Image (cartoon, rainbow, N blue to C red; front, top):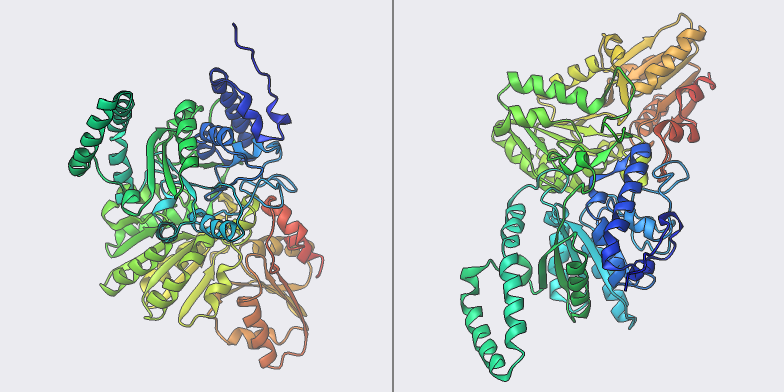
Length: 616
């Protein structure tokens, strides 16, 4: 009898259990349709592409084997949850846009989302906490932590594994091993996962052998005897996994694009009484030739692109601040043999590929290990070389303790390039870079700066590696800069007085590129307003405070951070020096800001240069 074809409109799905009705022969077409929709949506809106394409089949299989109206799934980072969003009734048409769907799991979006993350390695610890609460309340449902091969090597993930293995609160850990993470995996765990994957043949043969022998009484005796013998020589035939040694039931490796194999593994995990690890082997970027062939991570997170060519849709004559600083560092590395670059898993994101290629011996990708990065840098500095830590603003938070205790406390020289400082746009509240200034500001013995153009950027970097400053932080935003801006503001000081009008009664003290945009509005209008650009937010000469006291009104403009740093410090210094004029403070408020473009976020916060201009 011919199998009836099931028609499902993926944009009309509102119950993930619907996939349980799809026959195996039709699942391939269904997953291909989801992949096409993901590619179409990400090409328009940007987002995480390769990670989502690689987990389509696994997500479908999980929804076949579990009931997520009661079972709970936590996607580590959350950047591979697009298929799950589709299957739980959410459209990707407005993915990562203002008032749209987040690129990560969000509790406010759906009852199917039970946890939120935008950074890695939190899923196991959170799942452990949920399992404890479930068992104390005598409830019955499954809790699944879906974690990648890069995230599981982080210290937090290992802390979670260790704690789960000690208790009797069951969780199911799905290890998504694509031999990529963002780019190629770093360190011993990557080699370990590759090694145990080679035991798949052994695992398959063992299951067939068991199935045949257990059919007869004599076969049972033979199997039991051989099982005892096998355990004695197992260590010589196949590596015992770290999960076995920690007390987990280990299932795998399982090919993460074989629905029957995954269904069998997940149902087996479901029946276990104790915590279990299911090891999936998946193909990152599966189903789109450019992302599937990517070996360096270009297709992990992408901007809008043309599907046919794979080329980014981007303005001409622009460059990212990441690329500008990477070029500066590359030039310095070629001239100075004492420079060492350290990066926690964001080599591609921070445009460091050429640096890592040309200076291999002095470049270290430490993986998702921000704490290790800072303490490692302290060792480099203590032994006479100069460490350069390139790190995203939001990932800096996870290295805060080591930055304080192991670098700043010992007054060690270290350049910290803080990428994506300020508003982050479409990545949403988990990636906000507005808090790093306040995190560092109140710690003693450090320098905090932000350039508004490439020439300033180069001057700041050279200064950071040339003198004994202790920790020298250089913040820069996610936004691109027009290459024509290279020729602007050649002069340099702690603070630049960019506009200087005779007899001006008002002034603006601003930070970063938006200050330059404000200057253009003022100069084009011939308003009698002076403008200072605070290149150094800490420290700065007290002479500037005395100079500001002559103005009847001062506007402090910081669109890249909250007030708990430079803005507060300048306010206190002005009032301590008996400033009597009007003080207007414009800064990013203390709040988590949802997905939108950076310009939309600035507009909503009334922090565009045009908004400040209206106050003059």
